[in-house]
Length: 514
Image 1 (cartoon, rainbow, N blue to C red):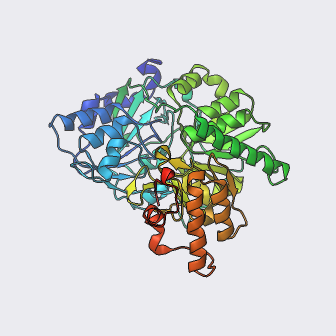
Image 2: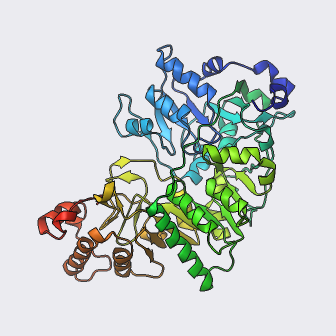
Image 3: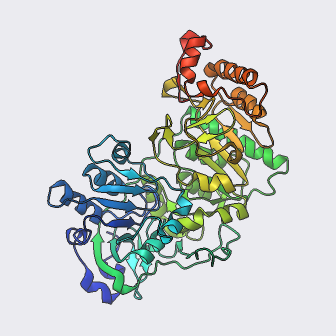
């Protein structure tokens, strides 16, 4: 453990509210709405959720709850609660396989899932869109003498949950370093029509306070936890993700050479995953320097860039690091102090700030069509995978919106470039650049037909280019050169039409997600 309870619970008025995890879980009743801290597994409560899951699994209690969070959560929440049938409703994002199965009807207890732009979650909650919040369950590294909460590795919507909840349960996690105190910048945003401009003009600027505020009378329980964070392992970069990274770095260098990037310090945003982290590693080996980040998450690659002297500052709402990355951060935390700040997700994903700062956004697509529309959340247009996450917050407001995807999936059986996406998360109006390992299509200032030719020739896998060309040419003929040529009767049965027309070589014939 990192420090003693006396070091962490410094507010004497709360000493008589210390409860065990089982007892605190008993405060959560059937039908309640529970809102939790964290963003990805980072910063999520663990001891109370695990105790509640065990009570439900053993048959001691029958519970159906609404679960709200800043983004996805750890296995102690999304997975454990989904597996024992506790979750009735869920928003705004997920990554758990068990939760995904229940959301898509593959479990005995179906979950009603609401997919929400992460930057809008806090405001939606304050406007009452999710109904009453009964309990806020918050992980903290410490509680100060005045009763302020020191967050751990993520903020998410924690302050909003505390403000709205009838009762608050605080988990003091002794495995989280007390030295996290001071890493956070908590800022309350007013709601329309009383909202004023958010006074932030640079990623490194602080505009709030380093603590979460909670009236002492709201705190129903303080639970002492020694549950270590279980971050998701970071997949190693492979040949495909490396090629995508090289294409993006080359594009950024060209933008700088052509004077469209005024300085190296234009803030970057990067999504989560192997491809996103490969891009960060590619930036480390590039001539670019004095980088800054204004993002929702920080991956290990951000630490690499800071250590290499390539990045000056990183702002996010979550330290979504691997186990090795967390060890690296915590073992040398004072060196990183002043180079990292964690904000409310309402600030990290604010459209106002993304546009003001001129962020270059880099996010991952499930599939993209030949006109630049992107699907980032659904499989075959029917099965939700994770959700839209924060990609929409950044894509709509970024200076340059980049989407990246491998050109094929399932070992080449599925083309990720299709005539028409089966589900639209980001329209062609919000996609400036599309990148695969095959190449890059700069779509800025292009008409739909110009976009189609660029995407087919630069981004599609060679095995699918002939079929995509054939579709596009026939669509142009059928629609007599319309602005956006489509054969709507065939767009959603593309692979059947290929087989019927014989436009794909027999040895490479495969499926598409379109």
